[in-house]
Length: 460
Image 1 (tube, rainbow, N blue to C red):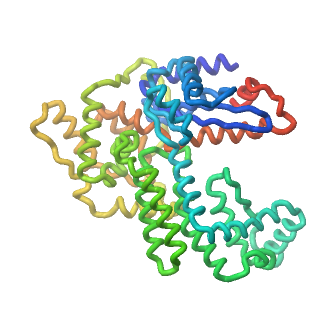
Image 2: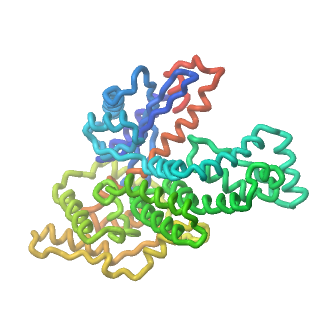
Image 3: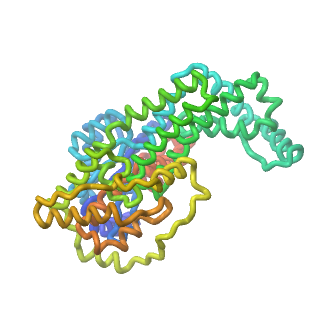
């Protein structure tokens, strides 16, 4: 069965000239096992996203950069993909970075993981906030006591006539879990008042917890947005721009005490430190340029010219040829019932609404990219088409970007290979996280002797 599926996957991947990858390492100390994942991401000629788990390889011995790079090389050669690597997304571990450098491939850090590190740094910067969070560990009481859970449920359903909500416990390895814990406790304030007031004794502590939730909410929204299976790397720069603007607005509010102003300042500093160079990274910059929803809205004048120049250099080099018979067959056999229609913003997050307001603002100069008429005719024609892309079309956030490119393939033939290459890169290694969530269910104290090869097969 595995051989048949592997053969089918290889046939699919032959239709791509460039692909992106995500990877991560997961370890279970109780079982003494580590697994290395490698997932592939691409966009077909029919502009459908393809996400495939290629390998869940056992890792034995030291996890050095040299060892990891050799593992990657073996896996990529096994799938005939060594020459098709556009970018690899990974965590910020020094061994992973070393492995990418040894392989000599383009690589980026997982955006979602980086955002969570910013949140952790902000929370840990103030002892007062840590004390508030420690008091919220009352959630552990409810999770460990069946009697307390039953009493809480009865208070909500019988006395308060509310839907039953459980207390959420903080977990250091779960994204946004501190936010979810505090948000839920605030919702359960009346139901759990008599119990929680033993820990949060003052009104100020409840008010400060509300402020903390308000500060962390945009981080939860951007994490959820970038963790979606439909998310694209082109949204990273715009969403981070809105995130910093939202934090600055929160800092200026009258209820922001000196403590919370310091926390917000720390969060913004961390964001600038970790993401300050995104505009100079073409993996992000060109993807944003090729997204008709954003285009050059978030670039400075100098960077606009640089991104356009870099993209033209790629086009002129004609380094990508994307016309294989199998790819055409795949396109003809697909069945696409998508429609470029807006689905509305009623369920959108505050972050999305703010982004939509920025994009809908009057900005005739934002897309004004001058044409160099002294260039060669071919280059000028391509510049003209890029200018057309920037000025003629304006998609709403809720519209299907990939379907728009599919319908405009003939108009922008020069750009299509690069659209498929750059927009295929995911903003984070979420697929690996999901894979390892399944692996954690396979390994348990009763299976700690499970061989790594069998665990790999079970995970796939």
